[in-house]
Image (tube, rainbow, N blue to C red; front, side, top):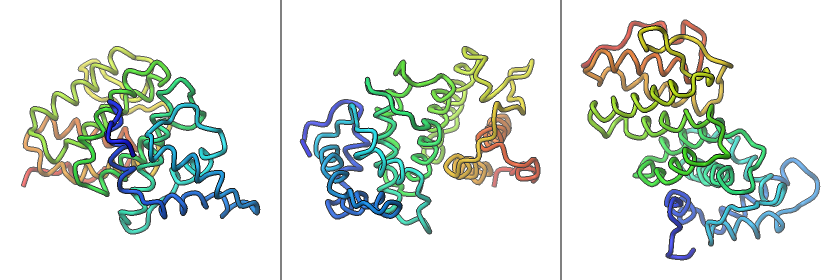
Length: 255
């Protein structure tokens, strides 16, 4: 890979460095698991180009997007870091492709949810390197507003355990202000007191966002500000939209 990393592609560069040629060969065979024809080489060449150049413009609808999208839906077993790294790489490629001049027909919100789950599972400092991707998603005219509103949620998850509460409040306010400016989104609705209201345009059952909502919920006992704690709890409910009893436990209190 070139040492000159394009602005905004720091996360993709880091993940590309973590993936070996053997890993790319493995990824190239994903399609062969479902089809009799072995198109491994046809998938491998463009995958290698992405790894070496970090370019995602005008990806072919089948070679390599088919195996990238298949990997995006993988559910890594038992927090397998290698599998999460592969999936994070594929999700990042797809999200960058969303922001390029050649938008692809794949779900942006589901891809972002799976990326968040993998980044949280891998750990390290990957969320810091994701800021360029998040900025590109927010600025791109090709991304639907209903998907853009999930980007500050992703940013909040990345900083949840490492930033002081006043910074978390600012990020949450960013999310609330964005929703106010786009009232038709129906992702996170307000009542007359500008509090979260229990309504969602459609259920969000993706494993990535379910993992993220539980990740926030489990951290709530460490939040000392009761208002911030309550708002984060409501955010958990809106991210996953589970059955009411799932988050019906008493609100955690600070340790």
